[in-house]
Length: 113
Length: 118
View 1: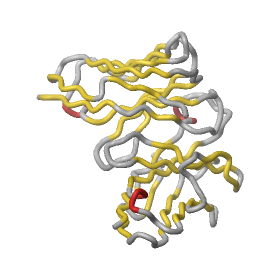
View 2 (view 1 turned 90 degrees about the vertical axis):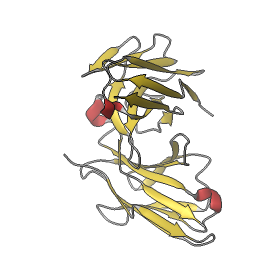
View 3 (view 1 turned 30 degrees about the horizontal axis):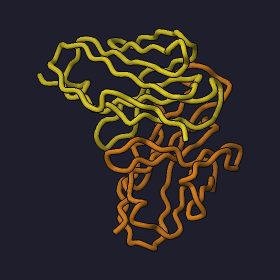
View 4 (view 1 turned 60 degrees about the horizontal axis):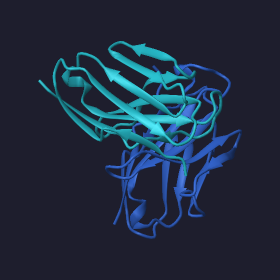
């Protein structure tokens, strides 16, 4: 089946540091999404990307849709303690479609104050 | 802000029992989904539902699973005879319409139901 490889698996950083995580796939996805999950909660959408090469920001978060359509990265600048959580990338084969999301394995982020 | 709600938050059941997990999607949404997340693992797609029928399902969604939209607001997932390996968080999600582009048209997830099969 379709697989998204997400790295790193976990990160331990100091408050104020920048962090970067990425997702790669062996197949093309035409929509890339980044979600954050807090303990005991459902995933919350952070950023949605629809065009190859697209760079989109949401506050301190920036994500890019890779040119090959097989990868995406998420950057968080000037991290704060509330950034703690699990970050998931997700891909969808079509841009406008009700079809399934395929999720990466997640990046567990810990921010030390 | 409208949100997806799920009940119960935690369900404990014995192996072989039937369970029904309930979801109330966002009111004007048209597409409904169930995903599951085994503890410590990634979120996995189970099934999508549109226009009162299943539009897509994964290999996980076998004959033991069924979905239903019994009325205009609820969306349920039934597991007929639970197995130990069904223990997981089950997330419901909904989406406004397939033709829109932008974050507001994407899938919004509920808080999940933790299913524990003993």
